[in-house]
Image (cartoon, rainbow, N blue to C red; front, side, top):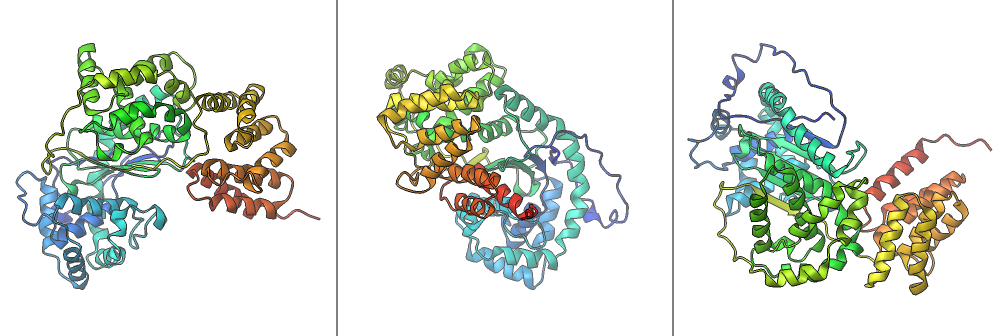
Length: 523
């Protein structure tokens, strides 16, 4: 997908709701070709239809349109005068599910628009167990929206406004591309098209002048209202979360060593509630803010002021992470590989003493409706792990993982063996030796090690990451040996692991597809 961007300014007017122009063809927009990524910025027919339905049902019916864009005001007036059986069902549904807080009401429908598939069916693009609670609360809305779309010919209306979206996409293309290029370049991260994680910017002026940030699991989204000035800081912050959020989950045993500092910071009154019981999300937020300080053009005094504010809010790891990024800038590997070294460079004892001297600020008043951007994050909780609470063992496991990334099997094996001396059945160490065997092309040993983790007394049932990937690697070995039925069973077992990483699920699905498409071998 090409990287696109869309924004609608207040001066744009709906083309007579296009009666005069609907027969006049507009020239196609020419896009500059850029590399494919999992980052997209575009309009969304599903979001547009959802917002049309919301306005037709009576949302913001009594709100003054004085500061609205002409397009938004015109469309609200048109939606309010719609009539038909589907519209009546829609309005009844809306009133039955109405909330006292308009912001919470809007949030539900934004979530629905983000996870909904194409018209006219609007089926969710996620499995039910992946859906946000807000979408589940709108049970039955999908069919109602589909009937409304067909009855009111919303598809024709969407095609009428599409040229406006396209022109604005072209104007803001470079600004969004710069944010993605600079951020991923600083972290030395490559955005691979095959990655299941997605970052989507949806431009929809009908939501008003609030920028909404959403993420659920591996899916990150921004809904921009279409203001003339692109909220670059908001987009950068959200995109850095997209890049950095997985890292504390990939190395939970490394981050766990900093828990004493986190427990002190969690007492800060201003720390957001969702960060008070989630170390991984807290660490990611601090790292995002530290990287932002590196990317923004600020004087030393301005930077110190920002870090002091973060300290007072409870985000006490921003400062040491900012300092640690200096060594990262002089290193070669990307952040995904360097992350354990970055974390280990923070002296937790020093930071505990510093945190004890910080006077945390009291909570601020709640922002009024429309006053600021909103960020709603459904954080993925850290999966359970079998890593022992032992600093030496954690350091050895981390070292082994780093050596695996460097493709140095001998050094990696030495690190994992140090763990097994103290903990003979430690799953992550056995798993690490399995990866060593793969690097050395020793299929027999790898098969035995991954087999121990997937069945028998040493099964890694309490460590979903190890269990899921062990099934995947075992399936690949069996497939290479021509045992396709057993390989298929292992791939299916990987998919059945509750709490397993999304990358392992993706690998298992690809493996199954490969097996299904392979021609049967001749006897």
